[in-house]
Length: 252
Image 1 (cartoon, helix red, strand yellow):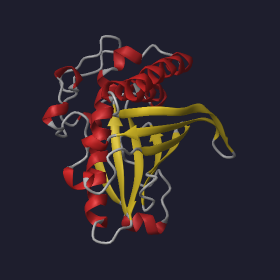
Image 2: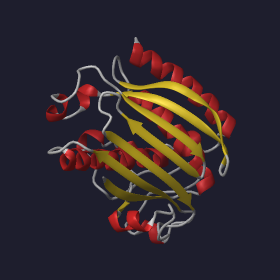
Image 3: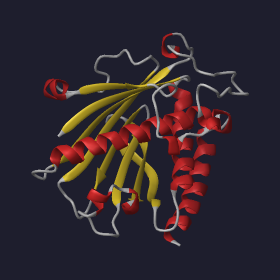
Image 4: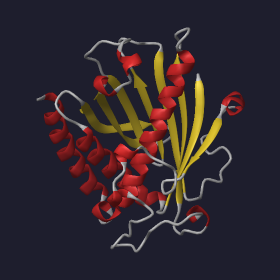
C-alpha cells in the first residue's frame, strides 16, 4: 500500500469550493467522455451518515481502457471499467475505486477541506501507523507543470483574471498572501497486491491521481465565473443535465 497526502490550495473559501468542485467534476467528465470511453453515472442520490449527517452518494463507471499505458492494457480485458463510489458529506468526503476483474486493486481517498493554506499537520486524522507511511505532496495549481496535451491558456491560473471576483492572476508564492484561501487535504491509499507489479502499479496510479488533481483544481479556479453565482440547487440541476448528456456520449 502506498499512502500519499495531497494538499491543494485554492484562492477561494471552503463554502465557495463546494459549488466549484461539483461544477468542475460534472463539466470535466462531460468534456473527457466520448463513445465507449469516459464516465458513466449510475447513481446520484442523497445519503445519511450517523456522524456527518446528510450527504450525496454517487456511483460511476469510468471507462478508460484505451487511455492506459500499453503495459497495463496487456494485463486487462479490452472492455473494462473502474467503479467509483463517493460519499460527499462536505466538508468531508470518502471516495473508493475498485475494479471487478482485479479485486486486489483499490484506491481509497478521504478528503477534508479547511480555510487555510495547507498548514494543518493531520487534518485527515490519520492513525500513527498511517502517519509513518504518509508522504505529503503540496500541489501548486499555478506553477506545477502539467502535460503539454492538457495545457490551455484559458485554464492557466497565472493568466486568468475573474471578472466577477477580481481574483487572479496567481503569482509566485500566492499561497502565502492571497485572501481568501482554502486547502483540500486528500489522504490517498493505493493498494495493488500482486507480486512483481505492486510498486510499479501503485506508483503509476499515484502519478495519474496527481495529474488529475492538478488539472481539475486548475479548471475549478479558471472556470470560476461560470459557477460563482450558482446555488446548491443550481449545481444539482446542472449535474443532472451533464450526467444525462455524458451517459449518452459514453453509451451510444
